[in-house]
Every structure is written in C-alpha cells, then in structure tokens.
Amino acid sequence: MSLRLDKVRELLRRELSLVIEKDYRMENGLLTVHDVSITPDLKQAFVYVGVISKPHQQEAAVEKLNKARGSIQRDLYKRVKLRNSPQLIFRLDHTTEKAVPLVQLIDSLPPPAEDTPPA
Image (spheres, rainbow, N blue to C red):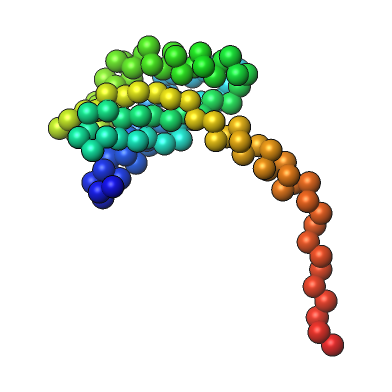
C-alpha cells in the first residue's frame, strides 16, 4: 500500500473515532474504531469497529452506524478535506473478544521466578 493511502487511512480512523465518540454513543456498551481499509481508488472505506456489549447489541450498533452513514460521512468530510471522499461501510471487528481469553490466560500465569546471582 502506498504511503499516501496509509496516511489517509490513519487520518480517517482518527477523525472517525472523534465523530462517532461525539455523536453516536452507545447505551450499555463501548464503541471503538479499530481500523479503516481503503480501496486504492478511494471510492470505498471499510471501517472496522469494536463493540463491547452483548452480542445482539453489537450487530445492532453496526446496523445503526450503517443507517447513519450519510450523516457520519457529512460530519467526517467537514473535518477531512479530500478530493474523493470514500463511501463508508461499517463492519464488526471481533478482535477484542478474541483478546479477552488471552489476557485472562496471561493473568493466570504464575509470577516469574527470581534469578539468583551467580556465586
């Protein structure tokens, strides 16, 4: 991927996080923007969001974001000036759910053994 696409991707991720945090809060859950993937022609941007809540609320949150896509794009592109403004498509990212058991496993490990200095 080109350096320009990487910069645009990171800029969109950062600004989308701010727009969603400000205007599209979730009740009984937490919504975060994990990543943005852009097509090379800048026509579409896939936004991967993590939702920490009950499973049925996760799908509902992504559906809500996709329904409000027009107003989210309008708010975003007031903040970000691009020649081509990609269409946003929100998708659920399950990496947070996969990380929780790993963190629990790490927490359950015994503390490291103390090293004794050589005599």
